[in-house]
Image 1 (spheres, helix red, strand yellow):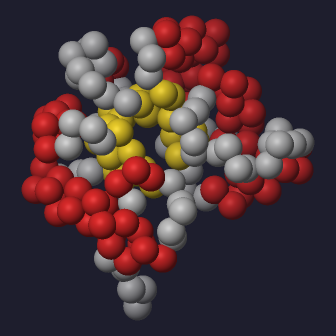
Image 2: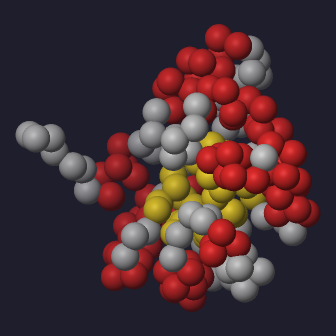
Length: 169
């Protein structure tokens, strides 16, 4: 309570140079979000959604935008070959617990062979345990606490090259 939520345009302006994953939850948000991004951050933003109809709406409204599809369950997988023109696939590391580590790595490799960028995200797994093991197969990591990840990885030497490449892809 008492927290001010910034407008999207203000976030784009204040975090000039940052790379964004704009997770679109509602179809009616597509056009206003694209307008805001065009002013400040279109080239630095991946527009993503777990809903195929929103992914298709973004692709239609902005064919040159980078658009990602977020996997949220087994039923999401059937959409991957159907969504033409997506830039990235956002895969939950939680899937390791469903399919096993080896099968998960194979799945990520098969997505990469299709030319998709892989963005890992987390719901309930220990990021500091899993991300270092999967980082070689990922182009980006989406986290609610990137400072915690950075601190944990620098401490373990995972990002010995610094974070200048994080989010580029």
